[in-house]
Length: 252
Length: 250
Image 1: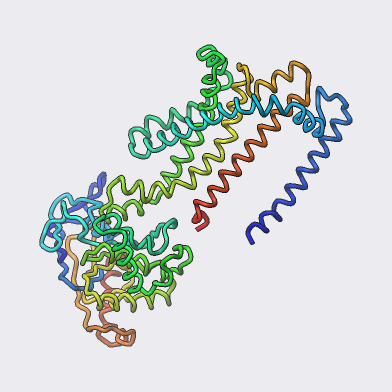
Image 2 (image 1 turned 180 degrees about the vertical axis):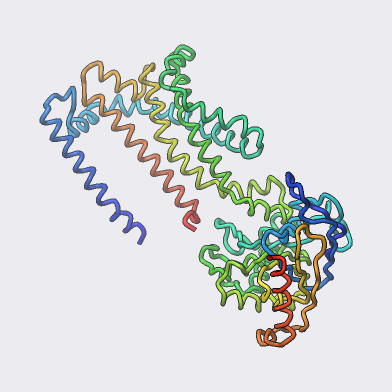
Protein backbone atom coordinates (compact mmCIF):
# COMPACT_ATOMS: atom_id res chain seq x y z
CA UNK A 1 0.00 0.00 0.00
CA UNK A 2 2.74 2.36 1.05
CA UNK A 3 4.86 1.52 -1.99
CA UNK A 4 1.99 2.45 -4.25
CA UNK A 5 1.60 5.78 -2.55
CA UNK A 6 5.28 6.47 -2.92
CA UNK A 7 5.41 5.82 -6.63
CA UNK A 8 2.35 7.96 -7.20
CA UNK A 9 3.86 10.79 -5.15
CA UNK A 10 7.00 10.57 -7.25
CA UNK A 11 5.19 10.97 -10.54
CA UNK A 12 5.24 14.80 -10.55
CA UNK A 13 8.97 14.69 -9.75
CA UNK A 14 9.58 12.32 -12.65
CA UNK A 15 7.66 14.58 -14.98
CA UNK A 16 9.65 17.60 -13.82
CA UNK A 17 12.96 15.81 -14.34
CA UNK A 18 11.87 14.80 -17.80
CA UNK A 19 10.84 18.36 -18.56
CA UNK A 20 14.18 19.77 -17.34
CA UNK A 21 16.05 17.23 -19.45
CA UNK A 22 14.00 18.27 -22.46
CA UNK A 23 14.82 21.93 -21.85
CA UNK A 24 18.49 21.03 -21.51
CA UNK A 25 18.38 19.02 -24.70
CA UNK A 26 16.71 21.86 -26.61
CA UNK A 27 19.05 24.51 -25.21
CA UNK A 28 22.11 22.43 -26.06
CA UNK A 29 20.83 21.82 -29.57
CA UNK A 30 20.17 25.56 -29.90
CA UNK A 31 23.68 26.53 -28.76
CA UNK A 32 25.06 23.76 -30.88
CA UNK A 33 28.53 23.72 -29.32
CA UNK A 34 29.13 20.46 -27.47
CA UNK A 35 32.31 21.76 -25.81
CA UNK A 36 30.19 24.39 -24.00
CA UNK A 37 26.96 22.53 -23.40
CA UNK A 38 26.60 18.94 -24.55
CA UNK A 39 23.12 17.46 -24.81
CA UNK A 40 22.10 14.86 -22.19
CA UNK A 41 22.18 12.29 -24.94
CA UNK A 42 25.77 13.20 -25.85
CA UNK A 43 26.74 12.85 -22.19
CA UNK A 44 25.26 9.36 -22.06
CA UNK A 45 27.03 8.36 -25.25
CA UNK A 46 30.33 9.71 -23.89
CA UNK A 47 29.79 7.82 -20.64
CA UNK A 48 29.46 4.64 -22.67
CA UNK A 49 32.52 5.39 -24.79
CA UNK A 50 34.64 6.15 -21.74
CA UNK A 51 33.31 3.19 -19.73
CA UNK A 52 36.66 1.42 -19.49
CA UNK A 53 38.75 4.19 -17.87
CA UNK A 54 35.76 5.52 -15.89
CA UNK A 55 34.60 2.28 -14.33
CA UNK A 56 37.95 0.50 -14.42
CA UNK A 57 40.26 3.13 -12.94
CA UNK A 58 38.66 6.40 -11.89
CA UNK A 59 35.50 5.24 -10.16
CA UNK A 60 37.41 2.82 -7.88
CA UNK A 61 39.95 5.57 -7.08
CA UNK A 62 37.22 8.01 -6.08
CA UNK A 63 35.31 5.37 -4.17
CA UNK A 64 38.44 4.57 -2.16
CA UNK A 65 38.64 8.22 -1.11
CA UNK A 66 34.91 8.32 -0.34
CA UNK A 67 35.06 5.05 1.59
CA UNK A 68 38.05 6.00 3.73
CA UNK A 69 36.89 9.60 4.15
CA UNK A 70 33.35 8.68 5.08
CA UNK A 71 34.53 5.95 7.42
CA UNK A 72 36.89 8.30 9.24
CA UNK A 73 34.20 11.00 9.35
CA UNK A 74 31.71 8.60 10.92
CA UNK A 75 34.22 7.51 13.55
CA UNK A 76 35.30 11.08 14.28
CA UNK A 77 31.76 12.47 14.15
CA UNK A 78 30.36 9.85 16.49
CA UNK A 79 33.31 10.10 18.86
CA UNK A 80 32.90 13.86 19.16
CA UNK A 81 29.13 13.61 19.63
CA UNK A 82 29.46 10.94 22.32
CA UNK A 83 32.22 12.87 24.05
CA UNK A 84 30.12 16.05 24.12
CA UNK A 85 27.17 14.08 25.48
CA UNK A 86 29.22 12.43 28.21
CA UNK A 87 31.02 15.53 29.40
CA UNK A 88 29.58 19.00 29.77
CA UNK A 89 33.12 20.41 29.76
CA UNK A 90 33.91 18.70 26.49
CA UNK A 91 30.72 20.15 25.04
CA UNK A 92 31.63 23.65 26.18
CA UNK A 93 35.13 23.33 24.78
CA UNK A 94 34.36 21.56 21.51
CA UNK A 95 31.01 22.82 20.32
CA UNK A 96 32.13 26.36 19.40
CA UNK A 97 35.29 24.99 17.77
CA UNK A 98 33.32 22.53 15.67
CA UNK A 99 30.96 25.26 14.52
CA UNK A 100 33.89 27.57 13.79
CA UNK A 101 35.64 24.85 11.80
CA UNK A 102 32.86 25.17 9.25
CA UNK A 103 33.78 28.75 8.48
CA UNK A 104 37.17 27.60 7.22
CA UNK A 105 37.06 27.50 3.42
CA UNK A 106 38.20 23.92 3.12
CA UNK A 107 38.44 24.11 -0.65
CA UNK A 108 40.86 26.98 -0.39
CA UNK A 109 43.00 25.02 2.03
CA UNK A 110 43.11 21.95 -0.17
CA UNK A 111 46.27 23.03 -2.05
CA UNK A 112 47.99 23.06 1.34
CA UNK A 113 46.97 19.46 1.87
CA UNK A 114 48.50 18.61 -1.50
CA UNK A 115 51.66 20.27 -0.27
CA UNK A 116 51.63 18.13 2.86
CA UNK A 117 50.58 14.80 1.46
CA UNK A 118 51.49 15.15 -2.22
CA UNK A 119 49.30 13.42 -4.77
CA UNK A 120 48.58 10.53 -2.40
CA UNK A 121 45.10 9.53 -1.38
CA UNK A 122 45.45 11.30 2.01
CA UNK A 123 45.18 14.86 0.71
CA UNK A 124 41.79 13.95 -0.76
CA UNK A 125 40.73 12.02 2.33
CA UNK A 126 41.49 15.05 4.49
CA UNK A 127 39.29 17.34 2.37
CA UNK A 128 36.53 14.75 2.52
CA UNK A 129 36.75 14.35 6.29
CA UNK A 130 36.78 18.11 6.91
CA UNK A 131 33.62 18.54 4.87
CA UNK A 132 31.84 15.43 6.11
CA UNK A 133 32.40 14.98 9.86
CA UNK A 134 30.56 18.17 10.77
CA UNK A 135 26.97 17.23 9.88
CA UNK A 136 27.52 13.84 11.51
CA UNK A 137 28.72 15.34 14.78
CA UNK A 138 26.05 18.00 14.94
CA UNK A 139 23.13 15.80 13.90
CA UNK A 140 24.06 12.95 16.22
CA UNK A 141 24.67 15.37 19.06
CA UNK A 142 21.22 16.87 18.43
CA UNK A 143 19.93 13.33 18.70
CA UNK A 144 21.52 12.96 22.13
CA UNK A 145 19.99 16.23 23.21
CA UNK A 146 16.57 15.12 22.03
CA UNK A 147 16.55 12.25 24.53
CA UNK A 148 13.98 13.17 27.16
CA UNK A 149 15.48 13.93 30.56
CA UNK A 150 12.46 12.22 32.13
CA UNK A 151 13.37 8.98 30.38
CA UNK A 152 16.95 9.17 31.63
CA UNK A 153 15.66 9.84 35.14
CA UNK A 154 13.20 6.98 34.92
CA UNK A 155 16.08 4.66 34.04
CA UNK A 156 18.07 5.94 37.01
CA UNK A 157 15.11 5.22 39.30
CA UNK A 158 15.25 1.65 38.01
CA UNK A 159 18.85 1.62 39.18
CA UNK A 160 20.47 1.89 35.74
CA UNK A 161 24.12 2.74 35.32
CA UNK A 162 25.24 5.40 32.84
CA UNK A 163 26.34 2.65 30.51
CA UNK A 164 22.89 1.05 30.65
CA UNK A 165 21.26 4.41 29.98
CA UNK A 166 23.49 4.73 26.95
CA UNK A 167 22.87 1.25 25.59
CA UNK A 168 19.18 0.92 26.26
CA UNK A 169 18.00 4.50 25.83
CA UNK A 170 20.42 6.84 24.12
CA UNK A 171 21.72 4.49 21.47
CA UNK A 172 18.31 3.53 20.06
CA UNK A 173 17.03 7.09 20.46
CA UNK A 174 19.93 8.45 18.42
CA UNK A 175 19.73 5.87 15.61
CA UNK A 176 17.23 7.83 13.47
CA UNK A 177 19.46 10.89 13.75
CA UNK A 178 22.46 8.80 12.81
CA UNK A 179 20.78 7.67 9.62
CA UNK A 180 19.82 11.23 8.71
CA UNK A 181 23.43 12.21 9.27
CA UNK A 182 24.74 9.45 7.02
CA UNK A 183 22.32 10.39 4.27
CA UNK A 184 23.62 13.94 4.44
CA UNK A 185 27.23 12.81 4.70
CA UNK A 186 27.29 10.58 1.62
CA UNK A 187 26.84 13.32 -1.00
CA UNK A 188 29.16 15.60 0.98
CA UNK A 189 31.90 13.00 1.06
CA UNK A 190 31.58 12.53 -2.70
CA UNK A 191 31.79 16.28 -3.22
CA UNK A 192 34.81 16.37 -0.92
CA UNK A 193 36.53 13.60 -2.84
CA UNK A 194 35.85 15.28 -6.19
CA UNK A 195 37.15 18.64 -4.97
CA UNK A 196 40.27 16.97 -3.65
CA UNK A 197 40.84 15.31 -6.97
CA UNK A 198 40.39 18.50 -8.97
CA UNK A 199 43.11 20.12 -6.96
CA UNK A 200 45.69 17.44 -7.22
CA UNK A 201 45.40 13.82 -8.20
CA UNK A 202 46.52 11.29 -10.72
CA UNK A 203 43.27 9.42 -10.93
CA UNK A 204 39.66 9.68 -9.83
CA UNK A 205 36.48 11.01 -11.37
CA UNK A 206 37.14 14.58 -10.25
CA UNK A 207 40.56 14.45 -11.80
CA UNK A 208 39.18 12.92 -14.99
CA UNK A 209 36.48 15.56 -15.30
CA UNK A 210 39.09 18.30 -15.02
CA UNK A 211 41.31 16.67 -17.59
CA UNK A 212 38.42 16.54 -20.04
CA UNK A 213 37.88 20.24 -19.45
CA UNK A 214 41.41 21.04 -20.58
CA UNK A 215 40.62 19.10 -23.73
CA UNK A 216 37.41 21.09 -24.29
CA UNK A 217 35.44 17.84 -24.15
CA UNK A 218 32.13 19.08 -22.71
CA UNK A 219 30.46 15.67 -22.67
CA UNK A 220 33.63 14.23 -21.12
CA UNK A 221 33.36 16.73 -18.25
CA UNK A 222 29.74 15.82 -17.63
CA UNK A 223 30.10 12.05 -17.85
CA UNK A 224 32.06 11.53 -14.59
CA UNK A 225 29.85 14.07 -12.82
CA UNK A 226 26.79 12.13 -13.93
CA UNK A 227 28.42 8.95 -12.69
CA UNK A 228 29.17 10.53 -9.30
CA UNK A 229 25.58 11.72 -8.94
CA UNK A 230 24.19 8.30 -9.73
CA UNK A 231 26.58 6.66 -7.26
CA UNK A 232 25.54 9.14 -4.55
CA UNK A 233 21.87 8.44 -5.21
CA UNK A 234 22.37 4.69 -5.10
CA UNK A 235 24.31 4.88 -1.83
CA UNK A 236 21.72 7.12 -0.20
CA UNK A 237 18.97 4.78 -1.37
CA UNK A 238 20.77 1.78 0.15
CA UNK A 239 21.05 3.62 3.46
CA UNK A 240 17.36 4.57 3.28
CA UNK A 241 16.39 0.96 2.79
CA UNK A 242 18.53 -0.10 5.75
CA UNK A 243 16.98 2.68 7.79
CA UNK A 244 13.45 1.55 7.01
CA UNK A 245 14.35 -2.00 7.97
CA UNK A 246 15.97 -1.01 11.25
CA UNK A 247 13.87 1.89 12.42
CA UNK A 248 10.24 1.00 12.53
CA UNK A 249 9.23 3.47 15.20
CA UNK A 250 10.20 6.81 13.67
CA UNK A 251 6.63 7.90 13.03
CA UNK A 252 5.47 6.60 16.36
CA UNK B 1 7.31 1.83 55.09
CA UNK B 2 8.30 5.34 54.09
CA UNK B 3 9.45 7.89 56.60
CA UNK B 4 10.66 11.48 56.32
CA UNK B 5 12.58 12.72 59.35
CA UNK B 6 13.09 16.50 59.51
CA UNK B 7 13.89 16.79 55.83
CA UNK B 8 14.98 20.18 54.58
CA UNK B 9 15.49 20.80 50.91
CA UNK B 10 16.04 23.77 48.66
CA UNK B 11 16.89 23.78 44.99
CA UNK B 12 20.42 24.97 44.29
CA UNK B 13 20.51 28.68 43.66
CA UNK B 14 17.20 29.34 45.46
CA UNK B 15 17.33 31.34 48.66
CA UNK B 16 14.29 29.90 50.38
CA UNK B 17 13.83 26.23 51.18
CA UNK B 18 11.01 24.30 49.54
CA UNK B 19 10.82 21.98 52.52
CA UNK B 20 11.75 22.73 56.08
CA UNK B 21 12.05 20.04 58.73
CA UNK B 22 9.38 18.01 57.03
CA UNK B 23 8.37 14.79 58.75
CA UNK B 24 5.67 12.32 57.82
CA UNK B 25 5.29 8.61 57.41
CA UNK B 26 3.38 6.10 55.41
CA UNK B 27 2.56 2.68 56.75
CA UNK B 28 2.91 -0.58 54.93
CA UNK B 29 -0.02 -1.38 52.68
CA UNK B 30 -1.53 2.11 52.79
CA UNK B 31 -2.86 3.98 49.80
CA UNK B 32 -2.03 7.60 50.45
CA UNK B 33 -2.76 10.52 48.15
CA UNK B 34 -0.76 13.68 48.29
CA UNK B 35 -2.64 16.78 47.16
CA UNK B 36 -1.49 20.34 46.79
CA UNK B 37 -1.02 23.16 44.33
CA UNK B 38 1.25 22.74 41.40
CA UNK B 39 4.66 24.02 42.34
CA UNK B 40 4.22 23.29 46.03
CA UNK B 41 6.83 20.55 45.95
CA UNK B 42 4.72 17.40 45.68
CA UNK B 43 6.86 15.98 42.91
CA UNK B 44 9.99 17.06 44.74
CA UNK B 45 9.03 14.64 47.50
CA UNK B 46 9.12 11.85 44.92
CA UNK B 47 12.40 13.00 43.48
CA UNK B 48 13.86 12.93 46.96
CA UNK B 49 12.55 9.44 47.61
CA UNK B 50 13.99 8.02 44.41
CA UNK B 51 17.26 9.87 44.92
CA UNK B 52 17.12 12.07 41.86
CA UNK B 53 17.56 14.80 44.48
CA UNK B 54 19.32 14.70 47.85
CA UNK B 55 17.98 16.46 50.95
CA UNK B 56 20.09 19.21 52.49
CA UNK B 57 19.25 17.92 55.93
CA UNK B 58 17.29 15.13 57.52
CA UNK B 59 16.87 11.55 56.48
CA UNK B 60 14.49 9.48 54.42
CA UNK B 61 13.87 5.91 55.49
CA UNK B 62 12.30 3.09 53.55
CA UNK B 63 11.60 -0.08 55.52
CA UNK B 64 13.38 1.51 58.44
CA UNK B 65 16.65 1.94 56.56
CA UNK B 66 18.14 5.12 55.14
CA UNK B 67 17.67 5.16 51.38
CA UNK B 68 21.24 6.29 50.70
CA UNK B 69 22.97 3.28 49.20
CA UNK B 70 19.76 1.27 48.80
CA UNK B 71 18.56 0.24 45.36
CA UNK B 72 15.23 -0.91 43.97
CA UNK B 73 13.28 0.01 47.08
CA UNK B 74 10.64 1.99 45.23
CA UNK B 75 8.93 1.95 41.85
CA UNK B 76 8.28 5.29 40.24
CA UNK B 77 5.60 5.95 37.66
CA UNK B 78 5.76 9.36 36.01
CA UNK B 79 2.94 11.47 34.66
CA UNK B 80 3.55 10.55 31.04
CA UNK B 81 4.01 6.86 30.38
CA UNK B 82 7.53 7.25 28.90
CA UNK B 83 7.30 3.92 27.11
CA UNK B 84 10.23 3.55 24.73
CA UNK B 85 8.86 3.58 21.16
CA UNK B 86 11.52 1.16 19.87
CA UNK B 87 10.53 -1.54 22.32
CA UNK B 88 7.44 -3.68 22.20
CA UNK B 89 5.02 -3.42 25.10
CA UNK B 90 6.49 -6.53 26.69
CA UNK B 91 10.07 -5.34 26.24
CA UNK B 92 9.11 -2.07 27.88
CA UNK B 93 7.65 -3.89 30.84
CA UNK B 94 10.82 -5.97 31.10
CA UNK B 95 13.10 -2.95 31.29
CA UNK B 96 13.51 -2.77 35.09
CA UNK B 97 14.36 -6.48 35.22
CA UNK B 98 16.92 -6.06 32.44
CA UNK B 99 18.57 -3.27 34.38
CA UNK B 100 18.64 -5.27 37.60
CA UNK B 101 20.17 -8.12 35.62
CA UNK B 102 19.31 -10.76 38.20
CA UNK B 103 17.07 -12.99 36.12
CA UNK B 104 17.70 -14.97 32.96
CA UNK B 105 16.07 -13.87 29.73
CA UNK B 106 13.53 -16.65 30.06
CA UNK B 107 12.55 -15.71 33.59
CA UNK B 108 12.27 -12.07 32.61
CA UNK B 109 9.99 -13.03 29.80
CA UNK B 110 7.76 -15.07 32.08
CA UNK B 111 7.57 -12.31 34.66
CA UNK B 112 6.71 -9.72 32.04
CA UNK B 113 3.99 -11.94 30.64
CA UNK B 114 2.53 -12.38 34.12
CA UNK B 115 2.57 -8.65 34.68
CA UNK B 116 0.90 -8.01 31.34
CA UNK B 117 -1.77 -10.53 32.15
CA UNK B 118 -2.34 -8.79 35.45
CA UNK B 119 -2.97 -5.46 33.72
CA UNK B 120 -5.00 -7.11 30.97
CA UNK B 121 -2.60 -6.47 28.11
CA UNK B 122 -1.51 -10.01 27.27
CA UNK B 123 -2.72 -9.74 23.71
CA UNK B 124 -0.77 -6.54 23.22
CA UNK B 125 2.59 -7.86 24.40
CA UNK B 126 4.31 -7.75 21.02
CA UNK B 127 2.66 -4.58 19.78
CA UNK B 128 4.41 -1.25 19.67
CA UNK B 129 3.36 1.24 22.38
CA UNK B 130 2.14 3.56 19.62
CA UNK B 131 -0.66 1.12 18.88
CA UNK B 132 -2.05 1.38 22.42
CA UNK B 133 -4.67 3.81 23.70
CA UNK B 134 -3.79 6.28 26.44
CA UNK B 135 -5.30 4.14 29.17
CA UNK B 136 -3.57 1.01 27.93
CA UNK B 137 -0.23 2.82 27.83
CA UNK B 138 -0.67 3.85 31.46
CA UNK B 139 -1.50 0.27 32.36
CA UNK B 140 1.67 -0.89 30.64
CA UNK B 141 3.62 1.79 32.50
CA UNK B 142 2.07 0.58 35.74
CA UNK B 143 3.09 -3.00 34.96
CA UNK B 144 6.61 -1.74 34.32
CA UNK B 145 6.59 0.04 37.69
CA UNK B 146 5.44 -3.13 39.45
CA UNK B 147 8.29 -5.03 37.75
CA UNK B 148 10.79 -3.09 39.82
CA UNK B 149 9.73 -5.58 42.50
CA UNK B 150 9.46 -2.92 45.15
CA UNK B 151 6.61 -2.76 47.65
CA UNK B 152 6.54 1.01 47.61
CA UNK B 153 5.03 2.59 44.50
CA UNK B 154 5.25 6.29 43.79
CA UNK B 155 2.66 7.37 41.25
CA UNK B 156 2.96 10.93 40.01
CA UNK B 157 -0.38 12.08 38.54
CA UNK B 158 -0.45 9.01 36.33
CA UNK B 159 -3.95 9.60 34.99
CA UNK B 160 -3.94 13.35 34.53
CA UNK B 161 -3.31 13.19 30.79
CA UNK B 162 -6.22 10.83 30.15
CA UNK B 163 -9.74 11.78 29.16
CA UNK B 164 -12.33 11.87 31.92
CA UNK B 165 -14.04 8.54 31.34
CA UNK B 166 -10.77 6.67 30.90
CA UNK B 167 -9.57 8.29 34.09
CA UNK B 168 -12.61 7.00 35.97
CA UNK B 169 -12.06 3.43 34.86
CA UNK B 170 -8.32 3.65 35.49
CA UNK B 171 -9.03 4.67 39.09
CA UNK B 172 -11.28 1.68 39.61
CA UNK B 173 -8.71 -0.52 37.96
CA UNK B 174 -5.88 0.81 40.13
CA UNK B 175 -7.82 0.10 43.30
CA UNK B 176 -8.39 -3.48 42.17
CA UNK B 177 -4.68 -3.88 41.54
CA UNK B 178 -3.86 -2.46 44.92
CA UNK B 179 -6.32 -4.69 46.74
CA UNK B 180 -4.85 -7.68 44.93
CA UNK B 181 -1.19 -7.21 45.63
CA UNK B 182 -1.24 -4.96 48.69
CA UNK B 183 1.60 -2.71 47.72
CA UNK B 184 2.08 0.59 49.47
CA UNK B 185 1.09 3.43 47.18
CA UNK B 186 1.87 7.10 47.43
CA UNK B 187 -0.13 8.88 44.75
CA UNK B 188 0.27 12.51 43.75
CA UNK B 189 -2.72 14.32 42.33
CA UNK B 190 -4.18 17.79 42.23
CA UNK B 191 -7.65 16.32 41.77
CA UNK B 192 -9.32 16.29 45.17
CA UNK B 193 -12.07 13.95 44.04
CA UNK B 194 -9.51 11.47 42.79
CA UNK B 195 -7.67 11.66 46.11
CA UNK B 196 -10.80 11.01 48.15
CA UNK B 197 -11.93 8.20 45.91
CA UNK B 198 -8.64 6.33 45.97
CA UNK B 199 -7.01 6.66 49.33
CA UNK B 200 -7.08 5.55 52.95
CA UNK B 201 -5.63 8.86 53.88
CA UNK B 202 -4.99 12.16 52.17
CA UNK B 203 -1.92 14.26 52.84
CA UNK B 204 -2.37 17.94 52.12
CA UNK B 205 0.54 20.19 51.23
CA UNK B 206 -0.70 23.60 52.23
CA UNK B 207 2.21 25.97 52.39
CA UNK B 208 5.60 26.85 50.99
CA UNK B 209 8.01 26.05 52.49
CA UNK B 210 6.45 22.74 53.37
CA UNK B 211 6.91 22.23 57.07
CA UNK B 212 4.22 19.65 57.64
CA UNK B 213 1.61 17.73 55.76
CA UNK B 214 -1.82 17.57 57.31
CA UNK B 215 -3.20 14.09 57.26
CA UNK B 216 -6.90 13.47 56.73
CA UNK B 217 -8.46 10.01 57.05
CA UNK B 218 -11.00 9.03 54.42
CA UNK B 219 -14.17 7.83 56.16
CA UNK B 220 -14.84 4.80 53.97
CA UNK B 221 -13.43 1.32 53.59
CA UNK B 222 -12.84 -0.80 50.54
CA UNK B 223 -13.95 -1.90 48.04
CA UNK B 224 -14.85 1.59 46.91
CA UNK B 225 -17.49 2.32 44.38
CA UNK B 226 -18.39 5.57 42.77
CA UNK B 227 -21.69 5.48 44.69
CA UNK B 228 -19.81 5.84 47.97
CA UNK B 229 -18.55 9.19 46.79
CA UNK B 230 -22.13 10.48 47.29
CA UNK B 231 -22.09 9.63 51.02
CA UNK B 232 -22.27 12.76 53.18
CA UNK B 233 -18.94 12.05 54.88
CA UNK B 234 -17.13 11.80 51.55
CA UNK B 235 -18.77 14.94 50.17
CA UNK B 236 -17.88 16.81 53.33
CA UNK B 237 -14.28 15.68 53.12
CA UNK B 238 -14.06 16.75 49.52
CA UNK B 239 -15.38 20.21 50.38
CA UNK B 240 -13.04 20.48 53.34
CA UNK B 241 -10.01 19.65 51.20
CA UNK B 242 -11.03 22.12 48.53
CA UNK B 243 -11.47 24.76 51.22
CA UNK B 244 -8.03 24.11 52.64
CA UNK B 245 -6.34 24.33 49.29
CA UNK B 246 -8.32 27.44 48.35
CA UNK B 247 -7.45 29.31 51.51
CA UNK B 248 -3.86 29.37 50.41
CA UNK B 249 -4.85 30.82 47.08
CA UNK B 250 -6.09 34.11 48.48
